[in-house]
Image (cartoon, rainbow, N blue to C red; front, side):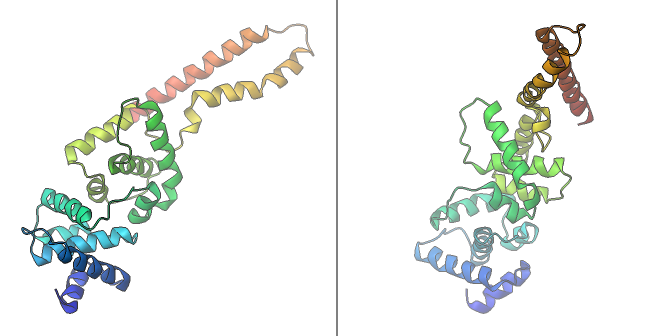
Length: 241
């Protein structure tokens, strides 16, 4: 494909950044040098290279325009994208920060990282956490919690899951109580930390009066009350969802 045709494809994908165009052209040269995929036509392979170039440079890529332009079905597109990515030796660990830049939601990066860390702690099954599905789900749930708008079809394609598998994964996150971006406010550890921080105050108060309950009794009562409130909060959150 010559430069004019390359630029024409770029415009149809709403790409005008020369760095992305140059990177896609570079990928096409490497692709052809390695033999390529015989079943892909020039248009399809060019679209795929633009997708990979945009991702590599942290630019937003218009998947809605790419699918019809490539002439591939969604499943074919994703499979071929992964194959071309391997062929070009572009496989690398995806980070939440990269996803947030790509999706235009950098404000929720810390929340998404916290959600993913909590998921790793709560889910004891052996899993390949380098797979993008887990990072994509954490970003999606963080955006949902903070009411940040992102393109759902785009993040599902990033996860490399089928829609049914994606729905199942999100449900798994939700069942573990990871529907809030700020997890600190509902952690048992923070309740106990608050109790410890009030010990000195309670001790000083009890020294001022003869009529007071034993400290261990007080501590047990406060903890039970706090845990009961925590359970009610979780139940209320589940009912709202």
